[in-house]
Structure formats: C-alpha cells, structure tokens
Image (cartoon, rainbow, N blue to C red; front, side, top):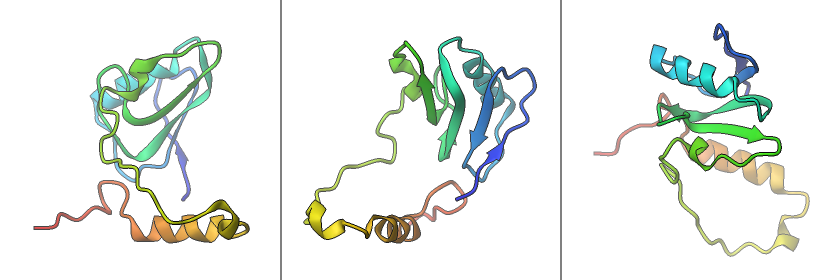
Length: 119
C-alpha cells in the first residue's frame, strides 16, 4: 500500500500517510503539533483509519527517541482492533508470511472508503 507525504505547513518532521482520505483543519493542526515534538524519531506515520483524537491522531504511529508518551495513541486505543488466536504454528508459516499478510489485507477492509456498513 503506497503512502504520501502530507504537505502540512509548519510541520518540523515529515508526515507520511497511508490513509486515502483528506484531513480536516483540526486534524492537520494536531499533526503539525505532533511533528514538532523534540523527541520524535524520524517522522509521523498515519494508518488507513487515522482520525481525530485527543492530543494526537488515532491511527498514528509516533515513534520517539529517549521518551515514552502514552497519550500519543489518541485516547482511542483498541478502536477497531481485536486479537484473534489462530491455529498456526510458526514452522508452517516459514516463507509464507508475505502471502498470508497480502491475503489478510485483501480480506479485511481498511480505511474509511473501503469500509461498508453491514445492516
């Protein structure tokens, strides 16, 4: 899945987005603020489901150096996520992880435009 560098004026570090939707003024302001953190490591990354949070974007990856900032999950951790135990053992997946990942990505909708409500 390709990403784009968001042209957010005043950002100190790059903001890379894997999302396929536009961001509001409020979201862009939040991204600008996060990009200015002195402990930020390299760039801010936005996942396909990124949306407004509190303090940072939900669905963002904010890697830091010499710091831990729990609030950078956007106060919505677990939003749309779940853990599933599978019957797979590591040995049977050797050499097949890429194919498995691609199959999962194809089967599970991501981003606001790919999601369809089930009524």
